Image (tube, rainbow, N blue to C red; front, side, top):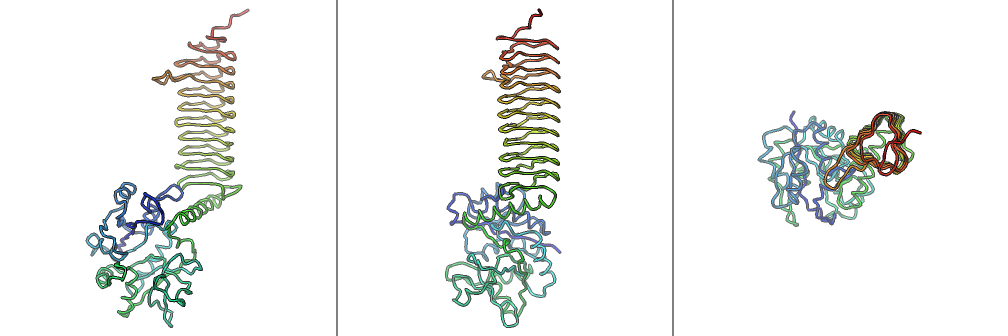
Length: 446
């Protein structure tokens, strides 16, 4: 059975009060429209059709090759939006899912149920409903004495008694494809000058056909984003879902409401996340770590049994048993080997620190390669930039760099070499040699 999906994403989104198309506003750092595409594909649909209008070019650029696009040049309602996809889909599938591009909480499992229900339904369509005391402007479901759906009445047209109905139209449907394309042509223009997709329910009932439905168990899935308050609600729910998934997999969170994790992040069991932790960009964290509080890790890899306190890690690699912080910063290209320790206010960029390196506080290491078990005293700086070019520093294993040493690159410090506190090193230092002073010179033997 072939399933096609139409995602409605042409609306203005005026209540967002934004220059950005509504479906490109982000929840947990991902545009709303991508949630709908992901759910549709996971439910078994072919490449979805996105109905675009407002901000069409921006939507295309964001989605890229993840979908096909049809322009709704005149926005004449939801039924009209579906109609413009006829040339793309008519005769090319058995069922058509129609969902909105501003409903990021609607899950693939729910859409699968909708498809399954319609695949056994003798009638032409199955719709999604929800019981809720918070109608959010949704239409009300009218049922007959036999319990069958008879119509959908929009909130603006509902009577006082109809407004008391708590079964709402979510706005997600699965249609028999052949029937839908014929029935769309029967929809009449509303007094507002629009063609409403909900009128298909009445058309089916008039024909004597059964309109089936699935009721959402999780009311949150019905949330559509129409303003910034809804956007914040969706953000909170998505983050809760992500956090709960990690907790069920063995990750502890001191306060889940203050932990922010993007989809695609992986975390090993027995890791503890403290408040103010942000994990983004496909970050991977090993087992038994303690992260935070107030730590940001983006697009990085962290090994097992690390303790990272109040630090920022971006595009970096961290080995096992690393201790950092507070207030450390690993920038792009930083690589810390097993057992490395960084004191507070240390920064590393585009450098590798081999296993066992101890880096004191208030130090900066850039464009450097540091050997095993090197001690880097507090206040040490690699002077790697001459105003035009970056230059490398290489420090051999077991070297000792005294506090407040300035390492003027390009520079090589030999294995087991030492620099005195406050030295300014401008020339290479051989293995085992001790240098002191400004500029640094070999320490004379007594």
